[in-house]
Length: 345
Picture 1: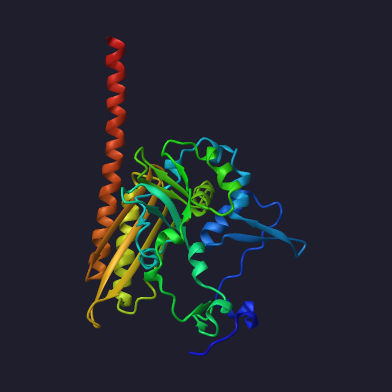
Picture 2: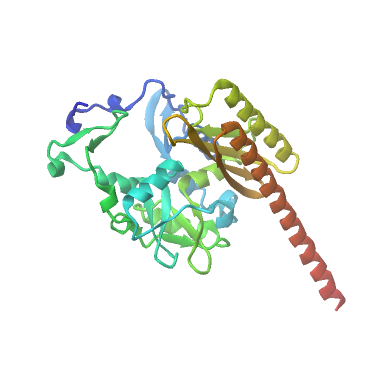
């Protein structure tokens, strides 16, 4: 593999020709429409055009900052935005483990904990970029990544780097019942962080909020006829044939139709990962995250047959969603019953 000086690389080197061009946002485009574009097309910022000329850009932070005091955000708690049950890594563990967790689960950030499981920091993908250093430090021992889009050292000893040395300390924490608007000012004032870690009373992580989670919530306010079903990783796996993929899609569609009778579904995100075990056979891991009007549903399954894994995953998601709805219903009934008993007393 040949090497190239990063100072000589052009922007187009890291841009794939098949990427979609971003939509041309006008100054009159509503922020909800902007959030909708950002979420569907997976952009962190969009260009603003007027009369065919570029006038500026609008970022995720711009949208969130502008809507901080709006009804869409101001009355909502952290629980309504967070992704529950986040992965985490201990500060004493090596950075290689953090990278593996983020890579295998398609994550851009994870909480960091101490020996007692309390949150003490966060590692984001931007922090990992610090490991991609200039040639002044590594001389000419660099080469392009497999994608040709990054200039990296041939060897970066991630297993010898403790997470603590890279993590962001003093993370922004929140309880589930805290209003999100009370946390956003600090988030806006600290450009070095973009994550809110949701913790319980023991400072154990119970959720995580990224800018994309907030943009997702705002985008969901737009009335849509099309449900977002995002399946990542499936098309890149050679071991799954077209028939199996069709069967997996059918199972997902069937589950969506069942859940739609009970919930208003905003989004379903599914990630598929294959692990080679003996060079010929793969083991499949599938995770799904469903956002409904009642909250989030998360499930994970693994096995040797991708169709069977998808069937069990969707059944688990359906069961978890229905059981959660029943628990909430029973809780409301008990509260009403207790209130009536208190009135009688």
